[in-house]
Length: 180
Image 1 (cartoon, rainbow, N blue to C red):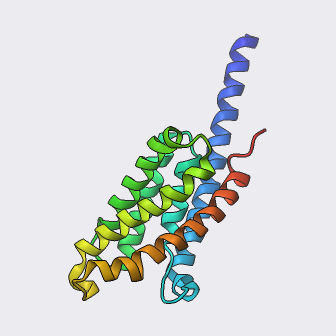
Image 2: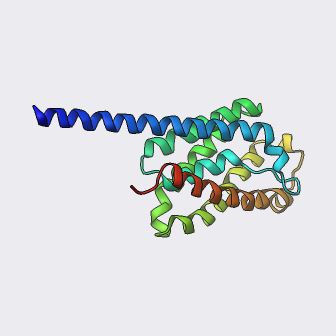
Image 3: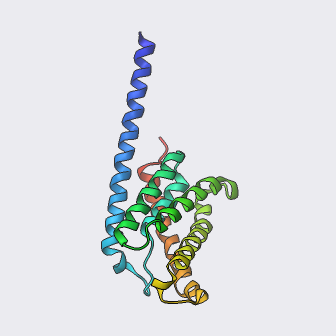
C-alpha cells in the first residue's frame, strides 16, 4: 500500500512541476510576443530590429532537455508571428522550428559549453532564417541585391540576436533550469 501511495505522489509532483513549467513558459512567451509586436521596432539600433521571439526559441533549445518543448514552442510562436505580422504564413513557423531542432541536436556535439555554442549557433541560424525570408519575400523587400541585404541587414540582425539570446539564456537558466 505504501509503495502504491509513493508512486502516486511522485506522479502528482511530476505533473504539478510540468504544469508550473508550462504556465511559466506560456507567460514568458506571451510577454515576448507582445513586446516584439508592440515595442520591437522601438528598440531598433541603426534601423535593425531584433528577432526577439527567435532569440527566445534558440535560447530555450540550448537549455531544454525535452525535445517536445523544443519542437512545439517554436512552431507555436512562429505561427503566432506569421499570423500577427500578416506576411506569408509558414515562413517564421518553418524557420523557427528548423533552427530550434537543429540547435537541439547539434548543441552538445560541437562545444561542451552551451554558452560557447550559443554565439556561432545564433549567428548561423539567424543568417539561415533571414536569408530564407529574404529569398521567399524578395518582392516585398523591394531589393534584388542579396549581398547588400546580407551586409546591411542580415549580419547586423544576427549580431543583435546574439546579444538578445545571451540575455534570454541567463534569464531562462535562472527561471527554469537552475540546479536544485
